[in-house]
Image 1 (tube, rainbow, N blue to C red):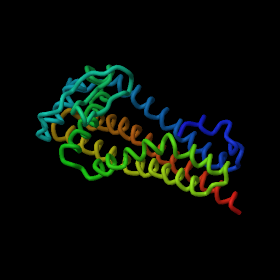
Image 2: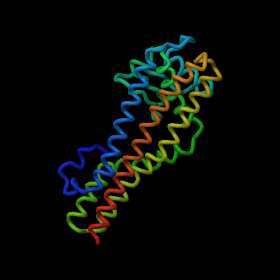
Image 3: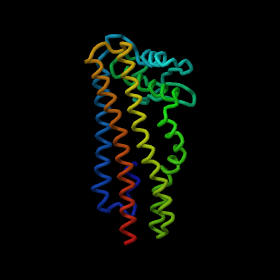
Image 4: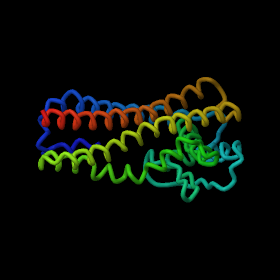
Length: 238
């Protein structure tokens, strides 16, 4: 949850901010730095196979027998994603045509998501089922909880915290989804020779591990926010 949601709130100077929210915020920053650093380093190392990110993604799709998913280029940096609604893997400018280790790892990871959807991977189905509630919770959860505290109206506090708890659940389900996509990607990379030696494979693993750390950080942040408001509410009741 963005730090500025707490600035100016009546609970901003609560001690729990410093031992829950601030550490979570610093972990999130560290995760972003780690993924950008790993990407920058491995985007300068080019694969011996000569495959571009787009070609690598297509290779993963072929490996899993997927024929109805397209691979397109999109704008932005590290904006790579799989769009299950339109069945399109969108790769950023630095990944689509690049033959770097980072590009191949990221492209194969996104193709791994396509494989998950094609096989009806259970955590994907769970994540999609709770997404609408999570979207409501991300905008209304904490504001409702704060309003309930200001008005001393416990049912509103409970509703707000319950809505926000779905964000934590979403992050919890997302983590195995991302790890599994990376596992699928690395398996295909090894089986098909997209990366030719252990050094190249290690480089791809570093990029994907750094990316996974951002989801761990998101889960920690969601949990810290929820715990903070539960603690505040509990103290106010006492």
